[in-house]
Structures are given as C-alpha cells and as structure tokens.
Length: 472
Image 1 (cartoon, rainbow, N blue to C red):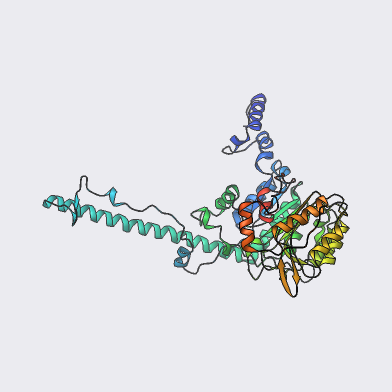
Image 2 (cartoon, helix red, strand yellow):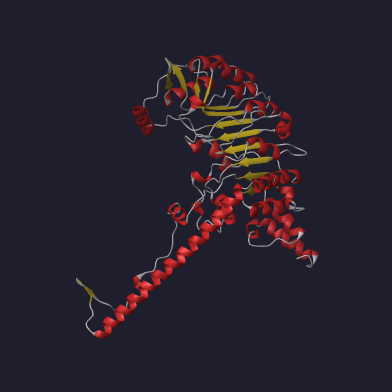
C-alpha cells in the first residue's frame, strides 16, 4: 500500500471513508488506511481477562493513529468457572450442539421394512444390511471418541485460563494494561466495568478471545461466570488516572466489588472531572456479595462536574441499601439527570438533595423507598421549586407505614408526576393492588412513559445504559 501512487491511495481512502463497512475484512497496513478507518472501527476497546486480550488492547493503544480515536475502555472482570473434571464441564455446557451420525447415511438403498423390522429376503441382502449396521455403529463410536477428545481439549484450555486468571502476576498485568491504556490514549476518558451485555457485537468480541475454550458464544453468558471477588473498585479507579483529562464517565454493571475501609481522594484524581455515573447490580439478584459499599460519599465528593447519576440495585432488597450518604455527598451545579432504583433514603435527605440541585435537575427517575417521612410530604416540599424539571418517572415508590413497607400504585405515581410537572392536584396515595394493577395495565397504560430514545453522550453506549436504566 505504501508503494502505491499518492493519487491512487487518496482515492482508495476516500472510497473507504465513505463505505466504512468494507473496511472490516481488510488488513490496515498504511497510515492512510488507518486514518480512514479509525473513526469507524475503534472508538472503544474491550478488555477481557485473557493474555491475548491484554496484548490486543496494548497494540491498539500504542498505535500512532488508532490510539487517538479511542474514547472508551470496556473492562470485563468476569472469571471462568472452574471445573475439576471434564464431566463437570460437560454438564455445565448442555447447550452444546454437535452433528449426530444419521442411519439414513448408511442405510442400503431401497431397503424395505415391515412391522417386524427390515425385510431381508436373501442372504445377500442380509449380509449387506448387517455390514451397513456395523459401519454405522463404528461411525457413531468414532464420532463419540472425536467429540470426547474435542471436549477434553476445550476443558483443558478452559482450566488453563482459570489458573491464569487466578494468578497474582496476571492480575497485576491486567491492571497495568488498564493504566497503560489510559496513560497513552489521549482521548480515553470513559470506562465501563461490565460483563458482556447480550448484544451480538459485544458477545462476538468475547467469543473471539475465548474461542479455544468456548465452542459457542452462549457458553459465556451465565451468571456464575460473573463474580469477580479478587478486584477492588479502588484498584480499578486508580488505574484510570488520566494524565490530562480525568474520567468523563464511569459505568459499573453487575460488578460485586470489594472496597477498602479507607479511600483517599488524592488517589482518585481521575474523578475530579467525572460527569456521568451509572451503577447497576440488577442482574445479580440476591448475591450476598452485592453491596453498595464503594464509599461513594468519598469518591463523589471529588466529582464537582457531575451531570448524571444512576444507581439501580436488585429488586426487593432496598431496605438493605441506604443511599443517604450518597445523596449527602453529591453536590454539583451541573447535575441534570438522577435515577435511583431499589434503594432506601430518608425524606429530609432526599428533599435537601433535590432542592440543592433544583436549578439544574431536568430528569428524575425514582423507584425509591422512604425509610422515614412520606411521599406526599416530600412531593409538596419540592413542588414549584424545581426550576428546570422536564421529565419525572415514579415507579414502585415505597414508604414505611406502621412498621410495614407500602408500595403505591402506578396510577397514583402518574398523578404524583403530573403534580410535579403540571401543578395538578395531588390526591392521597393509593397502595399497589396486584390484581387491580394487572387488569388496569392490560386495558390502559398506567405506567410511566418510556424514556425518550435520546442518543447517549460521547463515551456512553446505549446497550450499557439500557442495562442500568430499563426506561432508557
């Protein structure tokens, strides 16, 4: 390519720039090709816990052209499930498909059958039929041996990666890869910590890295493979310290992180420019390692430019997840979008938080439980005081009444929303009635409207935002 005439190279690059899909099967070996391809191919990198993945990310990060276009690093901390024997591995991969040996491929031509079995009128026909049966059984045995050998190879490769992932040396190398990438990619300011969402492009990247041990892509997407307990959030955030800009967005999905007892602000300088935080543990259900214990009140005190804050926890555990400290710590003149789901706060803390950001907040999405106070009082205290409020979503809001948690109906949530946005009357709250709500939702739309399909900001990605905010 470098030896081609300049005019021809310019024409090729112009054509590929206008038709970027054609770049996929082409090996990019020239600066002109790289410049034409980079904006389309690599705005984000995917890093998996595999040596080959670390090498690929490092190669792109050190590329003189490609590195300039990288804006987001998606870090998958998922670990492979260990299997002590091949039988355990096979049991955990019941979805594997293989080609069975069919009798129709061996059956003698024109063979007839009656109610007793094959019709073998002559000795020659009988010998031919039994010879075909023997070949069929041999083929099945050979296919079984071949399949067993293939499975054994997959299992051994699987266990090799398990050992690598558990080694201290690889964990250090993995973190060094994150640090190195953020240090040398000039526009890298966004990090997503997440197992793969079920988007084909995302799954395909992971399947490519682990193709030697995962016969089909579905082998990877299972909850038991997504419990990394050997990394702490502080380690990941320290690895993102950017020499120029700091972090623009932090997205954490289904990562049951551990946390140090003390997090020093000085060690998290990358958070000072943080604008977007999305945290979701929604798919971890009742996993005991799922805790909102990352000391957000410490980390977020450094985020003075925060614009969006989304926190979604598993349903029905809100009484165990107190977000008062999180709201007290958040203080940004730019905050415009807040989503809190399945967490517990007090009325006074929530009201103070909302009024503190009344001049900037535009979007409220709440699925909150009030530990003290009432929703009627909360809504009346903030009514007509939220200057920029454009959209409100209230779904499954709850409060404590006589030591019991009471969830309010979707219809009342709509009226409460209209009270805030349109100044209509606020009636007394109506508890949720499961049978009534089901019938009402079948006949009319009583739920909050879906979030507008607005394209995410630079560095944010719709498939990951959708994992945090089901109304996105």
